[in-house]
Amino acid sequence: MISAIWKLIVKYEFLVLVAIAVGLAIAHEITDDATYASIMGLITIVAITRLAMHPMWKKDEQGEEKATD
Image (cartoon, rainbow, N blue to C red; front, side, top):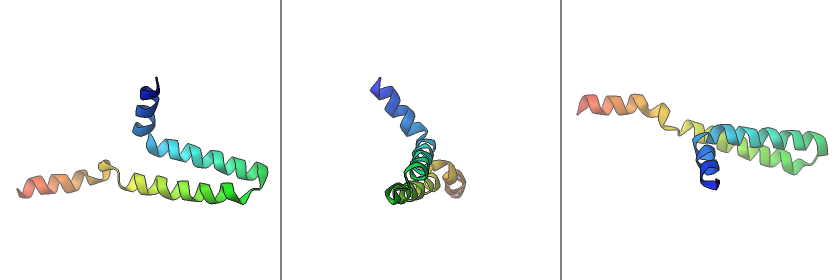
């Protein structure tokens, strides 16, 4: 069961991070605690960075390397 949940989290990593950031934004609005806003900003930066590093963006680079070989 935990293995299936972990696989889901890894597969949809960007969406999980966005959901966590949204939850922290809601918590910040409810409590006005600046800690939630700071953590939300960090999670957002991590989510964007992980999305930018995703292999789907590197398909063209791999195709060019194969074509030149």
